Image (cartoon, rainbow, N blue to C red; front, side, top):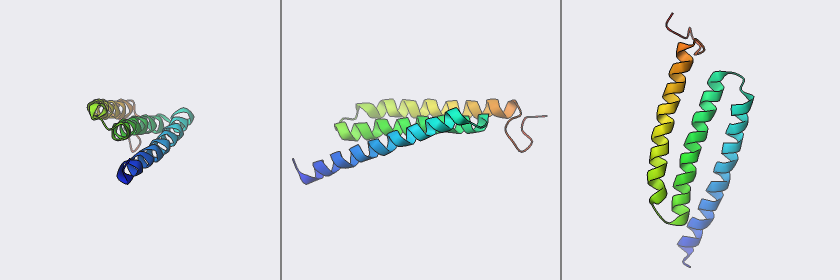
Length: 101
């Protein structure tokens, strides 16, 4: 096994551990709140971290099949985050005057 391959394996394992710790911390923020805006941001962060986990797993496994799934999840997370922000804004919880009224 070449040294470069070993370095990639170690780095990707380390990155996966850090990403999983970050997902757990974002889950704590999702559960604790304190308001809807924090929960939407935490959910968006968790989805982006999930995309990063898929990309890192693709590097670790040495195949590119996970990258298509990661791109699809990123698109879904982007649309979901925008929809959640719009819902929050229309309900008047968006801060700085919120809503259209």
